[in-house]
Length: 222
Image 1 (spheres, rainbow, N blue to C red):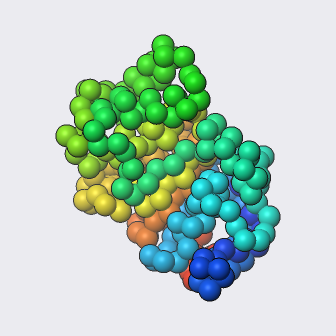
Image 2: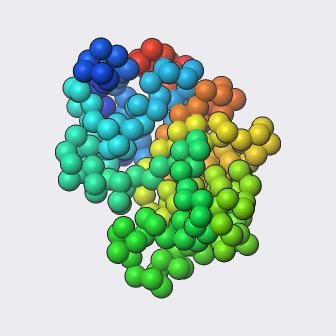
């Protein structure tokens, strides 16, 4: 395997003061340049695992290293979210009253990027995913597929090494879902990204480099 970007050992996570078990001892390794599917039904623990990998939440126990950082540490979580990890969510989580361009600028503003550099990056990404003609449209005025493309651009804004995509096709019609998945696959090949995709759709999981079946908070061979 190439350079290891994600290494997890015996991750465990519960909620409600331990009364609701979600992850029961997850171990995995993900190499640079891989597209890996976390495949499983709703409630299996896929989203929780992604949140741990990206520093949106912390495990109750276990060892975890992501891009050389420890997401259990607050300073490392902040650095991961700013510089190393991008998120794509099922419902995109964009700001509806802002334009596409304004939404894309948000991560750059958090990193104090120079305006000229930010503008060039916005244009580059928008052209790469085919939404450059929508940059001045508000999010509420574009289609679901265009919103998800915008969300992908936002995830890439600060040049992450790792993209975590949580059911990014789940709210889309079949044709648009195919387009968005193909876009993610192309980005892996052309930009050398590492993508971890949580999905309940086997057809997408089977097109990834590897499939990790998530069932009842554990990883099984797909």
